[in-house]
Image (cartoon, rainbow, N blue to C red; front, side, top):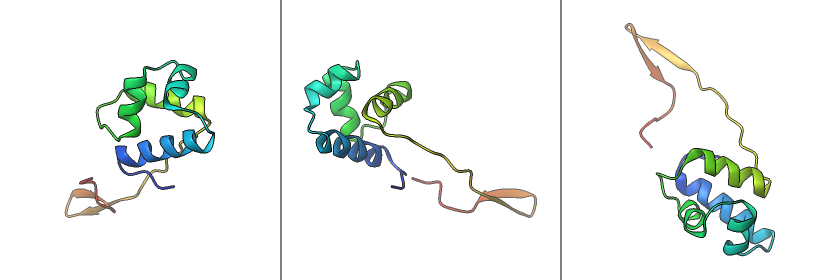
Length: 86
């Protein structure tokens, strides 16, 4: 799954939790985060703490992988090859 927004991460976390048959309350307890945090994460809140996002992901068995994109040089300035405005 391609992740480009906080909502994408939230959907992935929610789907994995539901696929495993775990309630939000139980998942929060298992992952050592609050119910409110996990709810905010699953709803795509953009200001959740990254360390806790990674903690929940690890706990639920979700792995993230990053790939660098290429840059182009035009007239001395650089532009990334895809849209960064998201």
